Image 1 (tube, one colour):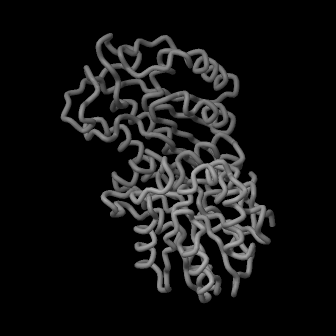
Image 2: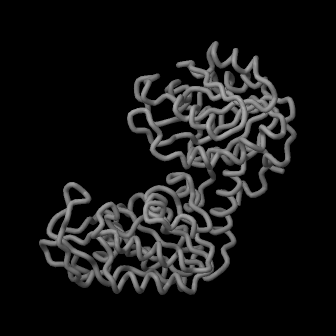
Length: 406
């Protein structure tokens, strides 16, 4: 797998050098306060290593999706402040709306070894960042005298932006940080050289989002479990009645092809056998609702399936028990509602109890596992939803591809 052979922060010497590090500080904020600092915590091992080695560390990241250039609510100031509480060194926040401005240049010029400067949100530069503009790439590189670039933002590695890929053309040395290394190792090895039996679990709403993932994983795994909203398209393709459940009619033929592909390859696809049904989608999403359980392929015309039923929970848990590697991406139902979270909880529980290597592919499944208190029982929880999906599709990620090989 591309990336397992990349230069890492352990292979380079940064003493006295300026080091630009692309981190993922895209943290959730409410009224300017960080509600979850997991992403900052995840970046600490790399940052602490570079400080300890005497590097002058300059951090850059995006936050949110500012539409019209700089907006205060998307400033990285709160992230810089939180970082300062977590490290034993000086942290300066360079407040420049153009990211690489007078404040940044002055702060970097005055740095001592082992100190940190945090730049403003890279997306304040708009298309310069998102269209991989050469201007921003050069400015970022010049800020650290073209010395060293470390990529440690897996959540942004699937995007070829100035701060994730473009900048590498203008620096002497490139490396991946510990977070990237761990992501590449777990996701890459799981898909390319899994210890078998290898079980993949896919959930979430839409088949369309996971077309290539389904196809790629079928070639790699032994059993593919499909739950969540996307299961109903498969059940309908199999001739079942799904009532008013979520369905992607344009993908019925694709689902038939995948079922046939599994049979041809001798792989198992497990679909839900029973379903929690209700008359309408809960509003608000966590509202109290009454559910009934029925067979998945016999949902009444006026009802919709919103979670897997108890028999399916047992079936899926059983498939996980004998596995040696499990990758899970996407919840089994509307897990935001306590009544409809049972399927997702059952899968999380099964993963928590297995000895297998368990990898959670970011996004909603990561949120579910953390919310339900199973995080410490998993081998690896990916920090990137979109990036981990593209990795599971077998795509080369631009932010990994640009880093030097050993």
